[in-house]
Image 1 (cartoon, helix red, strand yellow):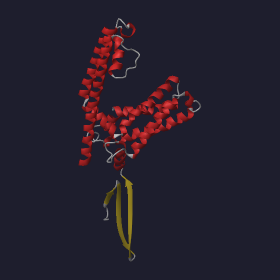
Image 2 (cartoon, helix red, strand yellow):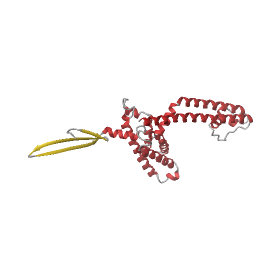
Image 3 (cartoon, one colour):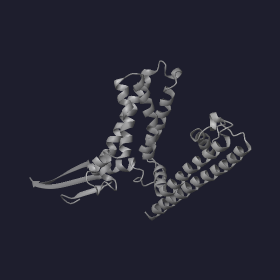
Image 4 (spheres, helix red, strand yellow):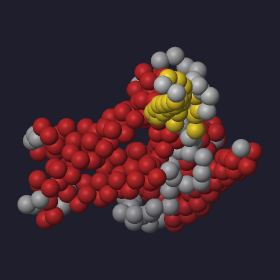
Length: 294
């Protein structure tokens, strides 16, 4: 390599400086080779591991796969800790586990904050790290770290219950590590107008169903259908095809209205399912095409 030449390979910067010195009838060649990791290349590599959209291969990156497993394990442990028979005598073990997991999530948060400048939006926006810190996903990451501080500080029963609830909410972090979750969010966002109309139609149908049952069953079962607000519970569980059975019509007219509402509920579920399925399919096909183009 010529004197002063600089070579870059695989994120490693190689600087070679060869100096020739003569004297005493002999020539001496001294080569000094220095290798150092470029800070930017390490940040880009970490960004590819943390951001599902930046990962060039199918599936999860190794780091995101590890984080996914950690999230699932800590949620299962949090659920198990709510059972007194399991938690009794193991309080120190659960507290140590929470501190370790919280430390890992803290490192993940700092890594995402450091690599925020590598995102597509971060390359062009001003103050990319501040924008990331104020975003909803970053707030979710911070909330996932809070139980570790609760474990260190201790506290009363109410604080411990709050910590357990927050730990279960770590499931929300799964959306950060999976490209499929990103696709689902994108699908919902693209069909937000249609989904909003379907939700509005659901509310209208519930109110109409409650009014009909109040008219048909109000005098026969005043404790369950004596007013429209009382009938709303029956209308909601029937329209969503749940049907707990705690309130059922007994008059012929009430049974007829109940059958109509049940059929309307099936059609409403099919409508919502079709909207989401079509949108999610479009997103997946578009991403496959983008992957082929790259």
